[in-house]
Length: 225
Ligand code: APR
Image 1 (spheres, helix red, strand yellow):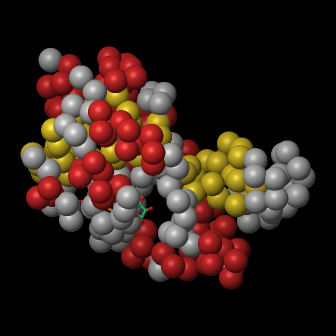
Image 2 (cartoon, helix red, strand yellow):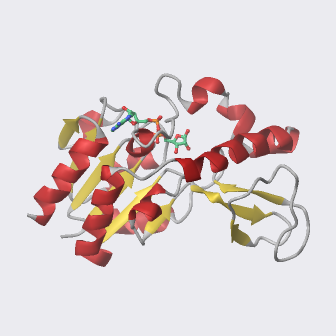
């Protein structure tokens, strides 16, 4: 059984990681256009670094939840027949035990050198412009995909969706492309597991409403039988 799973901020909400568009979400406190675009970074790099440094510093204090762990269990059973693609930049899938995680929007715990194009696992602040481990220049930026930039390896997702038996979307509002279009690329059955109706709910063959920590383990139990 070939399965593609997409996750969004909703899967990490019960771990205490704020979503973007729920009440008191991340974008409630910020205009994404001032902290999550290349233009914003050029205009005020310190503001952008502070925004991502704060979020990176929170990660060690939050834990994966039952939904993350259920997807790790699914990967252990299905191996390469599961493709997990996440819009999230947190590391909770990996810390729950998932080994193959496709971070289409990049990762908070990574830094990208704009001088030499090298990428590095990174847990510390970038505000003080630490030197790039490869070239030494002080031009590291958060290795996340900003609005207006191209998400990573969408061709891989397209191929997997065209070949899948089932596409499952978990914890996403379905408002941001290209992830919002995945349901249309899927050759197989489609299922949405989400707290509220998303922008694309009616495009799914089946939708279940509720918290990810209840819906995802129950669904994985169904799949593994
Ligand atoms: N269980 C399941 N779903 C939940 C839960 C929960 N406990 N809590 C919230 N949700 C759902 C909400 O109903 C909502 O549909 O998660 C979704 C969160 O939506 P957003 O905050 O828009 O997050 P997301 O869909 O991941 O945003 C997509 O937008 O701003 C960009 O790059 C950012 O990756 C992000 C992208």
